[in-house]
Length: 117
Image 1 (cartoon, rainbow, N blue to C red):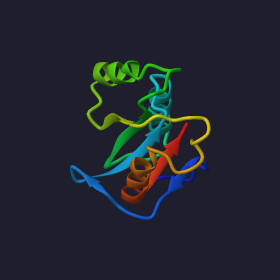
Image 2: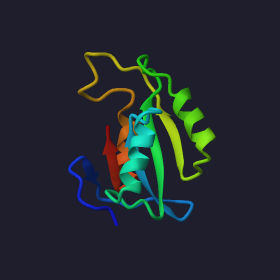
Image 3: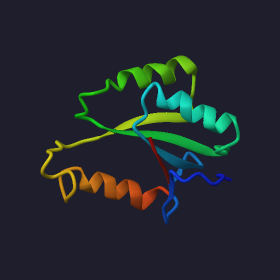
Image 4: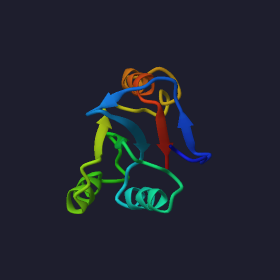
C-alpha cells in the first residue's frame, strides 16, 4: 500500500472517512501539495483509497493557506482537503500540554498515517 519512506509515521488506529483511509499531511502549502502529488505519481507512495487531509495551525503567520485551498480548487482534487488546528501557540507552551493538545490527540488517535513536510 504505502512504500517505505522514512518521513512517514504509522499510527495505531484506523479511521474511515467516506469509506477511505485518511493520510494526514502536515504543512500543506501550495508548494508541498504538488510535491506530495509527485511522490505519489512516481510510485513512492500509493494513495489508492486514501483521502489526504492537510493540517496546519490557524495562527501560522508565515504562510497563507488560502493559497493551498486555491491550488486544490483549481486542480479539482476531491481526494484532498485541508483543516486548521485551533488555539494559540506560545513559544513557552509548544512542547507541553496546550490548547491545541486535544486536537492533536484526536488526530493521532483516529488516523493511522501521517506525513510531515
